[in-house]
Length: 445
Image (cartoon, rainbow, N blue to C red; front, side, top):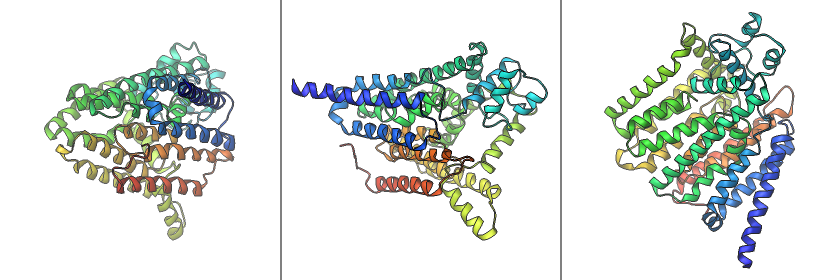
């Protein structure tokens, strides 16, 4: 009886404390409240890792932890994201589509100048956007979500935010279903599902800050499951839906082709391509490819945030040529990334099994982000999800460390602390190398 009371007490302390900190984070903390923000996140991750260490507790109370994981997400339902302002662009794109305007064809400032949208509400949206001078880069599935959210919000931004968040919450339920199916198929420990669903980065950045990696991860997890059970047509369609939510899954395609063989891989790719083209059809005009190309080009050659190799090369460039060579480096790094991704994919042996597939996928994602010029915190949620199907924990370490990048917003204008970035990547790479050398390690045993 005493042991039962101790368990109830421990569960109560964990859940109530976590609930209170998520509540504070969702309604009271701004992203420039750096010390308070990092303090709260530090407590949340301490509780998260402590919980994962309690193997017997989570094994016996797994359903309770799944329940509170979703309850934590619901805390954010009526909050306006205070750590990200991306949602203003989501609402803007939704309003464009509702007005019959192709979001890929017009810059936001051109929309206002030509009075395609007018009124004080739209002007306010424009002023709050962080990308008012760039074409939209959000694929068709997201544009559909933006449109539905705006259509049923009756011009109220707060209601639109609730709808945007509901799409992510519903997608997370689907992600839960398919992670569970994959874990069962691979005969993994059921409690590994908590690596993803209790992770504070996943909760805060997806359900909290409304980043649609949450929807993409549902589609890609479902695609992985049908790939494992050899229902390749289902898998290829879902893969296309993932790509039409966020483009990032494309880097996994060479690995999928290698896993299922060249002939099946070509058919798989063609089905995915056909679905992608169909979904883009409503937006296709003569400017579409040009504008998307320009936006992607700007992404790789102008923007920079929380990079690793790029910052090293940028520093070397400053030393030898005296200026930021981002235009050149931004072209070289994607090519190097593509080369290493192909190399990793081709090294997958067909007889190596499903574990090797997910381990390679995790390495591919790591390579991609190491060579990227921009690595926002929510990007790492993809690695956290894939790590569930491996024994690798470095992504969990990274999910905690990457919150340190919010220090950037402590000053105006925003300025990164490169020492913090260096420490972040140093620890992540040490964790990766440590696990690489000790393949059988399980720090939660």
